[in-house]
Each structure stands twice: as C-alpha cells, then as structure tokens.
Image (cartoon, rainbow, N blue to C red; front, top):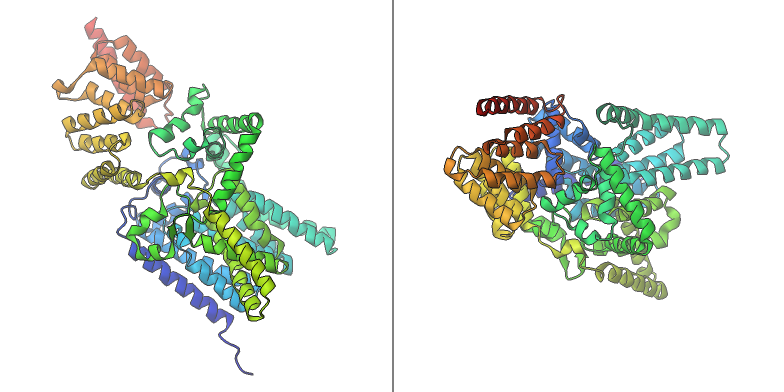
Length: 619
C-alpha cells in the first residue's frame, strides 16, 4: 500500500520543532528590549514573589494576591537555575511549542489532517501569543491549559475511562489556579459532559464513579491550596484576592479612569480606597469592599453597567491588541519578527483582524463537527473577560481554539470557490466584511490613547534598583523622564538611586520635583520627609516641613502605614516633640506582624528606647 503522506507523529514532531525554533528566534531577536531581563508591572511582581519563594522567605497574604500556580512554577525554575530569567523564558518557549502541538492533536479529533496542520501553524506563528509566552506572566500556561483541557474533554467523552476523568479534573484545577476565568467554562463543560453520558443511557453508578474520579482529580490540587490559604491568611479558598479589585476596575462609573490607572500614584489611589472608606484590613476585607462597590454599581446604575459590558465586548472582538502593562506595538521596535507578525493600520489590527472573521466563518459553516466544549470555550471564557476587563494578554489564551475555527474557515472558503458556489461565496464575503468592520471601527479605547514608553523604562528601572544595579537604574529613570517629564514616579525613583549612592542633595532635588508634580504621591512625600528629618547634612534638614510632609503621608495611608508613622516619629523627635514621637512609634509598632517583619519591629523598638532616653534627658 502506498503511503498517503507523513505520519501523524512526523507531522507532530515537525510542528513542535518549527514552533520551538520560531520562539527561540524571537527570544534572540527581542533580547535588546529593556524589559527582557528587567520585568515590569505584573511580570515584576511574579519575579519578585518567585525569588522570595525560591529563597525560602516567609510569605502570607501577598502569595494569594495573584493566582497561585504561576509564581509557584516560576519559583521552581528559579530554584534549579539560580533565578535565571532566560531559562524561565526558554522553558516557556518549549511550553508554547507544546501548545501548538496540542492544537494540532485536538483538531485531528474532529477535522481533517490539512485543517489540523493549518491550525497548529496559525498558533505557532501568532505574534501576540509568541510575545506573551516570552514574558514572565501566566499567559503561555493559560493557552497550554486551554488546549489540553479541551483535548481531555474530548477524550473523556469518547473513551470514558477513569484515567481520562482523573486527568480532566487535575487539568481543570490547574487551569483555574492559573487563570480563574477558566472556572465558568470548566463547570459548564463538565455539566455538558455528564448530561451527554446520561442521554446515552450510561448507568447511574458508572456516571457517579466518573464524577467522583473527576472531583478527586480536582481536589488533588485545589484542596491543598485551599488549606494552605486558610493557614496563611485565614480564608479557605482557591481564588486570589485580586479578583475584587480587578472586577471593580472594569465596572464602575469612572471605568475609563480605573482602566487607564498606571502603576504608581494612580494605582495606589485605587488600592487604598478601602482604607479611605474605613475598611482597612486584610486582603479579604479589601476584596469584600471592592465586590460590594461593584454590586452597588450594578444595582444602582444598571444601564451604565450594561453599557460597559457592551464596550468590553467590542474590545474583545477588536482586531487590535489592547495594552495593559505593555503595548505590543510600541515594543515591536525591538523585534523585526514581532513587527512582521503583529501590526496595525488605523483601526485594523493583524493578526486578530484576520483570525476573527476566518474563525467565525469556520464555526458557522462547520459547527456540527465541533464537540460542545470546543464551541463553549471561546464564548464562556470570553464572557468571563468581559465581566472583568479585556486586554491582549487575557484574550490570547483563546487563540489556539480560534485558530482551529480559522483553519476550518480557510478550507470552507476554498471549497466554496473551487465548487463555484457563488451565492455561498457572496454570503461568506459579506459576513467576513461585517466582522472585519465590527473589529476595526470601535475605538480607540481608553487604554489605546496613551503611551507606555515612559512607564516601561520606569518599571524596568525599579527592577534594577531591587537588583542593586544603580547606574543602570539611573539611566532608565532618565529615559523615563525624557519620555514623560511630568512623571512624579520617575523623579521619585531617580531620587532613590541618588540617595542610595549617598548623593543626598541630588536626591532631595528630585524628591522635591516629584512632590511638586504630585503632592499626593505617597512614596515621594514620605521619602522627602525622611530625608529632611534624618540626613546627616544639617544644612538640608527641615524638621518643621518634614513633620508636615510626614503627617500628609500618614493621611494618605489613613494612619495605617508603619513606615509613614516611623517617618512622622523621626520628624517629631527632631523638633523635640518626644511624647508625640513616642505615640507615633507605638502606633507603628502595633501594625507590625512580628512573625514576618521581626527586623523592622526590632528597629522601631530600638528607636522607641532612644526617644525615651532623649525625652528623659530633656526633662
């Protein structure tokens, strides 16, 4: 018998190698970018948390701020690689290649080989997916889980063996721990799966056995996380505490302001809304505050709430990539490959502006071929994003499934043209044009109307400070100021580099600029107050102004920040106001958790004893 072409195994290996070579080439091509070894915003948060975990530092609430899976995985990479960011990115390149392979294997279950190959290639060459897999964020893992989860649903429905159901439960749990937006889809798809088994007259006892095995697979990962959460934070649960604030960001009367709030003063203003309302407490109390704000908003302004959902739906369907922490189009200047694979002209964005109409055509013309979970996923996962807020990074895990639909759409169009079915061709063309217009015309959205250059340099500089690379940090802060001279945060960061190098006069000048630009930027206000109180250069001291600034810093934190109270105590002591200084220190000490901040507690107690001696001496 003659061979009909390469074997499935050969095709799978070839696709994996093509995807891997492309991803490694992108890492090399993109390596000159300032953020390549200095992650920014969420990536920086993950990196710092993973380093602390790898070093064995005690952690509590901060561990459950973001979804738990990714920082645990990243910390495991850091443990074996001396905290190598490059190795973590290489591992993620391998993971992304596996995603392309799984896309091919998933499509083979219900489409022909040519469509499966094209689906895998679309996923392999999809620019935004390529980019986010190279970042220290969970997007690559979320895309991987999306395809593996769907593959396991198909296998469980067809083979019905217990192992498939156990793996399905475990994969579902890990996907939820990676990105909670998987939860609605996973519950709905499990319901569809078991309803299908019931329709096919599977014995109730066999259904119960499979349901129990699936639950055990879930519990294998979710139960330890829930118990660990209760041990560290006092809350039994698996979802991160950031869910409340994320829901609030996309659902309030000033959502354009909250959606475009940048790291620094704007973000801190949102984070400290609970404190301003008298709800200062642990992360779960803060989450309850934001959830209550969203609930009140939906009940008191339902029309505006619905309008917001509509706007976010348009954003989900937009051909352009909505920025959040970074802007792909700005960053493409550092990669020829990214410029080729991801670009926009006016309202049209490539590749999503092409992928979406092809996917809709493929879904509309071939929907009977797709298993129910495959159809459900983009709708329920997309709805979860719309309920919160939409960004390129969060939308990207949908790409492998949409690539399968798009591959089917390509061959549906080809077959229509080859068979000269012109009426069907006209319908497809009209539909595609309507989808393209729907994806291009809305916007620009609020997040697209600002530049991210200055913020990128500033956040990279903050990372360099954490690594004690002060000359590099200073250079990046200067680039940030060049891009955005009005950035209080950049001037404050530059001041910090000067202060750490002993250049106190220059540090004071930069903190003065930062406070002048934004009198409510806590870090600049508090740091300037500390400098004016404690500097050894007596000509720079100004205890009276330091006290005023320190009181303002305490007000910005509702007198619930130990560092601000310590600064106030130092300023008051320099003015000879020892009773007031001792009262401020006592309040600061009351806010310290001795199990986690023992060193700070000892320092505050040492200063407390010093002020007591000075007060006695004055008397």
